[in-house]
Amino acid sequence: MSMIIVENLKKSFGDLEVIKDMSTVVEEKEVICVIGPSGSGKSTFLRCLNRLEEISGGHVYIEGTDITDPKVDINKVRQNVGMVFQQFNLFPHKTVLQNVTLAPTKLKKGDQKAVEKKAYELLDKVGLREKAKAYPGELSGGQKQRVAIARALAMDPKIMLFDEPTSALDPEMVGDVLDVMKQLAREGMTMVVVTHEMGFAAEMGDRVLFIDGGYIVEENVPKELFGNPQHERTKAFLSKVL
Amino acid sequence: MQTIINAFPYLMEGLQVTLYIFGIAIVIGFLIGLIVALLRLAPLKILNWIAKIFVDAIRGTPFIVQLFFIYFGLNSLGFFSLDNTTAGIVTVAINAGAYFSEIIRAGIQSIDKGQTEAARSLGLNPTQTMRHIILPQAFRRMLPTITNQAIISLKDTSLLSVIGVADLTQEGRIQASATFDAFNVYLILGIIYFVVIYLLSMLASFVERKFVLR
Image (cartoon, rainbow over all chains, first blue to last red; front, side, top):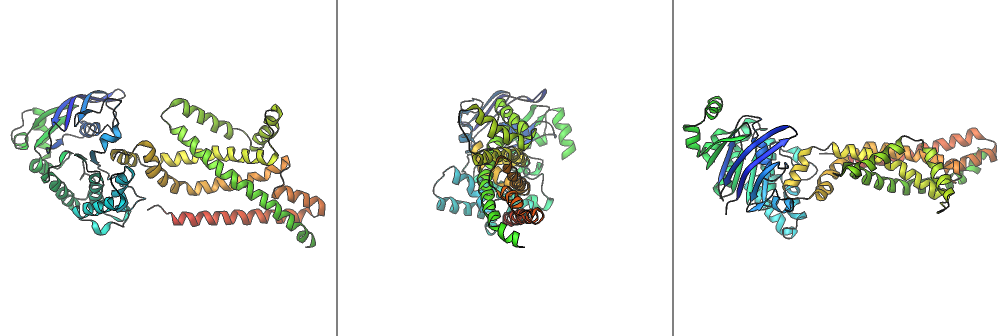
């Protein structure tokens, strides 16, 4: 079963049509990188995948569940879909450990001991065990983003969505965050990554989607999309960013 | 000096009444404020309107008129009879509730939208998000303004003396006329209010420091 199926997705903000018609399929363990100019609708596309944006038309199936169906318990679906934001959005009034344990504790994923043990394992994975008792305000941007990844992973998601995870970081912090993402990809996590890091897309992406003007203009393996783009708009975009 | 020594025990009795009324009214007022703020932000238009009409009605009328309406007005209908202390508590609570609701609403709205998105993306429902993520952060920001409103409400209780509640101000009035020493009695009355309010704001800044936003 495909992890994500997007069928004729449409999204408007008032009169502004941001996503005109997008369809694609994401299989299990695939890493999909989404690139495109700013304002093209790529973040909105990602935010429709867990219905952070109300979907205006079409269908999005997550593991077979149509999340555009108003009867669907979206909270249940979201527990299986982790999300990492450009601005981290850590909870500033909670420690690093509490940020990671909050959702599994409140949503009753096992007893507190097990939840904490798992949280420490995740902090180990992102290299921040020693910051468990720190507050987000005491961390650097790169550390915050790695905590945000650990927080999302604490719910054992089947899918991880990344919304420009390195765009708000100082250049020297980008590598640490990308390393964590690469490790996740190698472990077989299904990932959809909106990014400006063409190097990451080329290295880790199973497929790359080029989005512009509310459409998926081109979709291919990175080697083809970067090496031999078919559309004029893709060529124009790549010539500016590569 | 002798007048003050004689009057002091009566003033302390009045202070007890004032603090009793204030204590109950402020807790109820805060709950009213929280509920009205949540109605104001609820996704249902009709609830927003009800909340807005309530706040506008309270903000647009003087406290003393609200007090007379509840004590004399509602009692005159004959469905129930509120004694003056209860009517006073109800008025202070409703009045504070309207102002609290605006403070709480602003506090909730001041929290970055990304906090809600992060919480919802983890699978928390709107109630859990409000309770564990938004309100704790909002309350820290609101604390100074809440203290301010609490102090105003404490001072408003002095108006209950008009309907005969034996509060601090009422005891002061009685003592002033009994002793013919209005100057000293009202001076002491003012000092007592000042000390109570000063202690209250010290308590508030202690709590603020304890819960400083990280």
